[in-house]
Length: 506
Image (cartoon, rainbow, N blue to C red):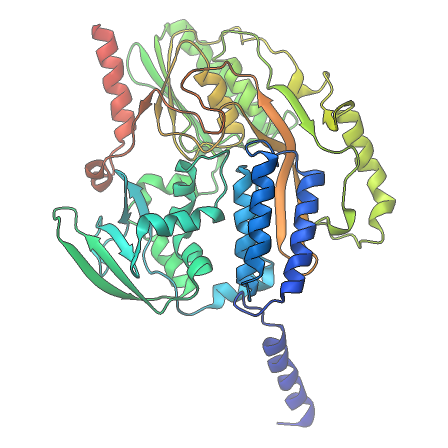
């Protein structure tokens, strides 16, 4: 090997050693304190959702906890977990705390230490969602390495944010990334001692599983048993997968909307969707259907105005997208930490345009809050479509329903002619933080924190069964049964169809 080639090889080798970044590396408490101070400042000055579900006393208390936690923290991962806990505590499904890419690259390369099998919440139990593994399909997990699985999951909830104090949505998030979340909370684990019960037995058994690589876990997730039933939730949908309509009989039909990501008024996809809705509801009116099942169980949100346009075909009242919307500033705060590629010294030169946009959009100041103008589309008074359906609406919801989809589902749930079936949504009934995403980078750790700045009160009626800090609560709480899970059967749809038959007889 010649000298130049040797030096090049040595440089590459040293680069990998010096610049490889592991979440398990040491990280000074001085840096942690600096980043915690910046993180708190960001929340106070930019995040209108900080006190949406928590009192000032509660927020102060968890920051006191964080300061004490730093005193016993030694690694980068220790600090990341503190920030995740703070992020989750606020209660917004649009909150997110993410590792810098160089740390994620290192995780993806890890060759061991990950729980091997995907899991799923069925019939109130966490089960193995994998066939032909060392633990039988559908077995109930009792403990992992001596810790009750219920306690394990509580620890992992911080990695997947939902609105308010909702937990059903966290179960949806955990089932995909369970192994990664376990690694982030408990570290790399060479062996997993799993206590479990098979479905047809009360006998507890113990099996020791060897840890697998990061990539092998996700390969196993791609081969999960439930894939044929739930794959559409994990797919980048084509236009023909996003919505559909099916007439079941002379009086009943199903409208399925799997996403509201169909562009805005300027896009062909949005125009195609509006044409689809108009055609469907014209047909429903001509055929005088009495029952419409509206299935949004896989809908995680999307873009305006697809949500309110859809609701206009189900509304029986004048409505607005929002009763009120506000943010907590009129000039973007803490520019030097803002997550943009522009050098920090140049940011003040270009920010004026963006500040004017916020000032025009939120011109009304009251007690340090800046409210949206009455002329904005969110505040526009809308009329029901002339072909709006007036029969019986059966709304199917799930923990996957979020953001624009939960706004839509909330308004439909508020109708007097709607019966809601399924499971509590992760998106709130009364409101959420949405519309405008902001991102900041913490200076020492480079952890990225994202949140949405618009504090939204949705135009929905108060209902006795809907709680402020929760998702949409169904009138009939129905989840997939264990037997139907094994058969890939849709428990909730079967329930709705049976309910319609019973109501026809009454």
